[in-house]
Image 1 (cartoon, helix red, strand yellow):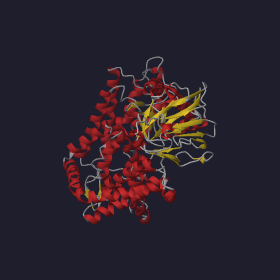
Image 2 (image 1 turned 180 degrees about the horizontal axis):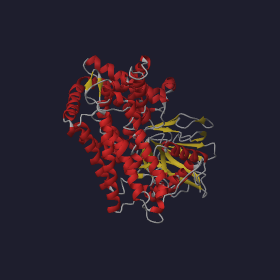
Image 3 (image 1 turned 180 degrees about the vertical axis):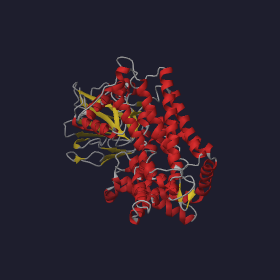
Image 4 (image 1 turned 90 degrees about the horizontal axis):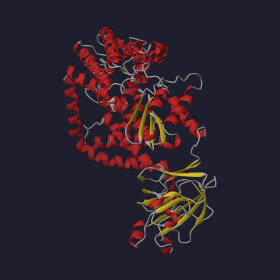
Length: 612
């Protein structure tokens, strides 16, 4: 569940990335700035259609390959849900949450059905074209449900939001504290989305951020208190860490921490700073969360209101200055919090002997990567520190973090990652690894992907085979057939099928179709010979319960349907349905590595083939 919520949090960042453009257009077009009405209207249009943008962005963000078909499905899902619920109850308007729900459903359905194969007479509607269709059907059902159940649900959500708003200083203080505490696990985006886009209503606009730009005189209470922390407090924490660094290392860390301080002041991006001390001293991080809550409370009691399109940095502070209430007082509070942060951080770092940047023991010094090849060097070090590309299932990133799916988390060397620029390392689960890099994370992620494609890393995978079946993976040595289990017939793995469709694990040529239709051979373009044997000893069935969809010599694409079989009746006939998938010509110089997942879907990576 945590991993799923993190995926949603990451997906939310894509539509949220449109907000700076919306806020910039809307503000610059106002009569107190450039007085350009069409520019203001353009920005307002983005805010007015925020729910639709979330449906698109979340769907694309959750899709496994970021394909636009997922975004189209999100749009269709949102329209069906919105109009369907309104037809049942005209008072139902799911708004922002309707957009998120539509995006989630569309993204998940895309991952499940984007490569689906349909009968020839329906072939045009297969693959990605099927996703909008199945999304529309699914959302019709959900619209029928939400049309009746959503009013009390929305009433409950509104009551929570109104309670938090009416709680005044207490409400914003709790929000500020939780906002910081949820950063380590990446769930602050989920909390922020509810507060900024859902809670409260003003002339059709919902959420603290939306209402602020719509002119609500009571909006901005959940944003104002962030400015003193992000513009002043955390930059001062950086200067405290510089002052507390060892004299011989102070010059080295000044450039690093000074850059992080400037980034926080200008843009409000704070994660690289927070991760530099978060795991070194959880106590110091809790103090930081409490100071954030204190800033929120004081700003609220002082009657200050302010808002941002991206984050609480100087850009948003000055851009929205004329919309704010007592903005100069916020700057004054910021100076006070800067002093508090410097004193608290310096005292705790020195008093607790915390190993913040510049205070590491000898042998733990950070490696400084510079020059045009900086990101390539970091990428190579990161890959080596996490066990090589063989240990990586997927590479992704958000604003400041590398988000990796791993095979073996025990191979991850956290110290080496931190010595090479990582601000922090999060092992979210036994497969989910997050490396906090900073705002230039995308360059590191791109370098990692490029190196993997170019084969510059030793022992890089040469070929991956997707799963031809839905089912449960069974190691080859556990197959109840000595010829397969001993490896006599080749290297590979087995799948215990849960459905009766067999798909091509790779593009290639069908080299063999057994007359009994229970086994198929495919030769890839690289010369690897793959045998797919449906069941054990099933040659005795003489083709009963099997239907072949290819013939010998036919060229096939990855994911193409090879055969259908009635796995239930095969079992009832007394046969083991376990299906070995092996490389019959794999010699000692070829490693065939099976996925470490327990269950698998067609299209998921099943085997990786590489030279030793």
